Amino acid sequence: MAQQQNDAAMKHRIQQEADAKARERERQQRILQRPSDRNIPDDAAQCTIGDGVDRYKKLRDMERRLDATMMQKRLDLTDPYRQRTELEGTLRVWISNTVEGQPWQIMEDHDNNDTFDLADNSQATYRVKVDGRLLDDPTQEEQPETDGDAMVQDDGDTKPKESSPSRSRFSDFFRAIKIDFDRSPSLQPDGMSSIEWKRPTNPHDPNKPRMPNNSESSFDTLEFTRKGDEELNITINLYRDHQPPRYKLSPPLASLLDIQEADTATIIAGMWDYVRANNLQEDDEHRRFICDDALRKIFGLEVLTFPQLRETLLAQNHVSELPPLQLPYTIRLDKDYISPSSSTPSAPTIYDIRVPLPSPLDAEIKKLATNTEHIVKLREIQDMDADIAVIIQAISRATQKHKFLTSLSEDPVRFVRRWVGSQKRDLEIYLAEGGRGFGEDGSLPDAMRRGGEDGVWGSEGVREAAGVYLLKSTAR
Image (cartoon, rainbow, N blue to C red):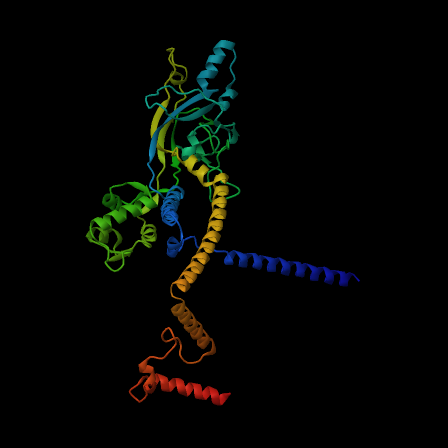
């Protein structure tokens, strides 16, 4: 009983799927049968009053140009490798450090409290602070106050604070920050020789490294605390994050294109300009170009194609990953730096870095590309185009009818003769009989009436056709 119910349910489900497919085929068939031509026939102007046909043609021509312009602009805006106007800003980096539990601090506490504990020396620590801000005014000198946008690291524990996406943060310009200590790990109290931060990847799409509005990937201040009671040199390596990715060019290629670093699209465009300026393209195929002496020294090839140029650049190591920006800093633990005798505190180490700024048009472009109102209007335009196509189809039929009746009224005898001859030719074609539509009245020309070996009927093609026909008749 249960098996029969399962079989019945299976058959019902299969029938429903078949019905759904049939309905989809019918819908697609209706879409295919829907008229799509919106070009008004030329003969319509002869049977209409006024200049409505000419105006409609002008509107159609304007619509074509407008559609082409809008499509080109849309492609230009959404193309990730389009030629952008690059903006640059100044990212100012302040580096400073503070200390706790250093010997001279313990001595001062001993003088103040009349106590001294040698065990406190093992708790000597230093705290390094790396603060970065994008300067609205390049003449800004003051270090800004630390706000809530900081990445704090205490002995390996990361404590991010909330950040606001209202402006570009220090970490937004880098995909990784690595701090190298100029000392062997065996001499370090914690046994570490470097500290590294990497931008967290997007869990939904690992190929997209950026995670906006995330406190772990967007901050202005990076701080870390380590044990130590001796001065130490460190190097802060900033690995830049460019979209699209930028590469460092090899010295020969950089000398040829007069650029030191660029993205792939800029490199290809520079090669294109060089090839075109020196007339190196082959005449028969513009994708290929002949290498001159300069290109031959770089690539070692006689002929190259633009489609394979990117692979060639990577295979021959003419483009490589950008090296990190290196900021050296000395961690000072002495009293003169931490607590100077003067009232003025010690100035931090300052670096100015030129960084690319996000285009102010990117947000508007993204908004335009994902605007639902635009999609709704496009659907409305498509519906109106379908209605116009139906109207144009009706106009075409009315024009043909008007032309038919006009020809009949002007010369009824000749029109009827031509119409009968046309019907006769169609009937002969359907029946596969002679005539085949020679002339308006279906009569054969003189060349077809003459016989003999030199005539049409004596040709090799006719003989072969007759043989095939006789063979078919015999087979029947």
